[in-house]
Image 1: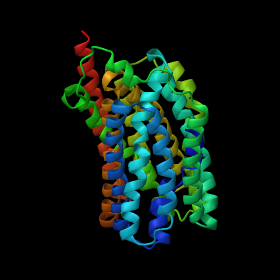
Image 2 (image 1 turned 180 degrees about the horizontal axis):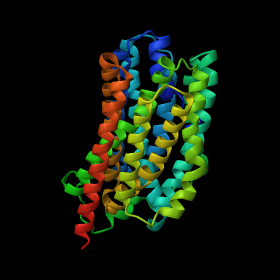
Image 3 (image 1 turned 90 degrees about the vertical axis):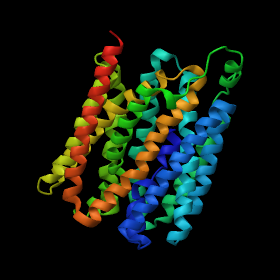
Image 4 (image 1 turned 90 degrees about the horizontal axis):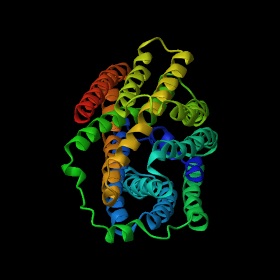
Length: 376
């Protein structure tokens, strides 16, 4: 995960790249980012089915190898007609990795350690995310082509690392399940889980504005260079890397999972609302800190709930549905962002996002009350 994320720099700069380098309109760029999300949705669904069918281990390598190859090819595309389908393929391969990754956590860690295991996984991701936008900003000032080559090669290297160093399970999850008498459960018929997925999708739609609208806002309104944008975005990865593991260790049993998700939604709301104040670097820094603490409080507990809700024989499908919520958000997020920016400007966008953040908070509070009643 660390190797892969150290090179994950294309998505951070993709909106700026499409508008400034390829001279596409903001609406066309938003559509491509939505296809990015559509590929993510399809990849998560197929990845989950494959995990339950053949196990997580082969999916980990194949996903990373195909992702790296398709990113390099995407960097060679120059028109809307060629970039759009390639953007779909990149995230189709990339997000088929997610259910396999979740299943691997259940294989390599104990159930009582899921939240800390997820935090450790995210630690690797966020150390990488601290490095990648900083390095990406420097590379983008020289040539955007470097972003695609570095991103692609690091994905392939991560796949090779898995094959060489990650111990293959002696008994696959699939083999265990074939010998078990557990009745399979369908996450699409689990009403409480579906409500959880609905509010995760809303939260994720708002959270992805960090990647889709924030860089463009910094470029258009603050006139920041790609290098400065990369450094600002890297604060998020650094903050999570330095704090989250300690935070999770301290708080994980002090509150319910849904209460932490609700707190994360309130902090996310604040990260948008601060941009209604006059433009200043301090406003940007406060916003980045708020969104950083938002994800630290919300996302590990979302992932833990998703994994702990799944019966052993249905981990792939439950994980896939959770991943699909984030993928669907990646489709919706740029459409909402680019549409509002095009027609009404950034200020209206921040107001709409703040209101939706409050709706997300209310949703998780509702789920917390349902959970409390169910346990009485």
